[in-house]
Length: 419
Image 1 (spheres, rainbow, N blue to C red):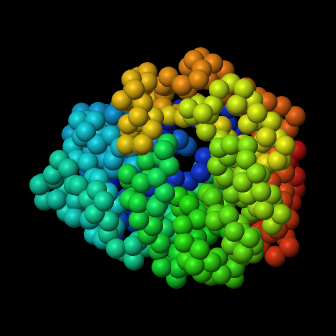
Image 2: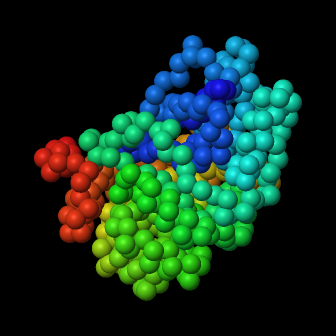
């Protein structure tokens, strides 16, 4: 039996964030496309070390982030030196295809379902591996997307202070929006591709975890479908978090009933639109983490200060601050390249915690200073760990109310909350 080692390279975490590790989603989707006749070994280098002495027939690098590329290059070099073929795929491979092609034996561009990855592995076995397999924007039928292969995960590694982390699952692909800092439209196309609801329910039922993260790009693309999805989730009594949900009272009420307890909501200005959106979510018992992008062309230092004051005023539970980063194939990057505003392409520093371009209304040094100010000011009176504990306490109450609480003993929950 041929052994395939699937590796998810490590990267430098954002120092301001509380460090915990979610089980990665890309690798488990890739693993689901590997036929059963292959033995699959998985290493998430963020929680485990790679043992290069263990023999393997091939290595698959699954890379999601730009800042994983330098480590991916190092891993590939080690295995290639030992004569092991290295293949690469994933979001960052698609964003940096020409560069990745230089340091691996083969790259895979696109989505792996529909027998496509199986065909690549067959070529590998037959000694006719191609340098590139290009299925970019040639999407397989969405019906071919089945359950991810979560059995490859070492679940004991994805626990924070005794708390079992959420499992990731997606109900759709593609995004009809084309937000200026985002590469999603380039990667997954501008067409919204929802999975059949019964397929999503089947996968979620099979996940041995009552806490999930619906990692869809947006749950605000098709009201009819999302209402059908939420109706189907209600009987499962799962608790889940997600990216933005359609800002509609009926939809939000249904989401809360279906188990939504926490939403990542982009906060890009101090308008009543944002204020009312956050208010609506919170009125249905849904916690809000503000996702705040710093350094856009309409911002200066004073604007950022006003934005932080606004977050405190509307009382979001959490906030995550990111510096605008010109990743390849995003609308903003094309503009900045044309204007000569990109400072460097040292990918290991493309973490969204460092300024790598010239802002319009302040110096790079000032933006870096304001990034530190944002984290420090928002969490000044209530730390990240305390805010997380409060959110988690609310979740436990919901689980106790519907009889699904079973992840930890109450004494362990209290221990976590006290830290």
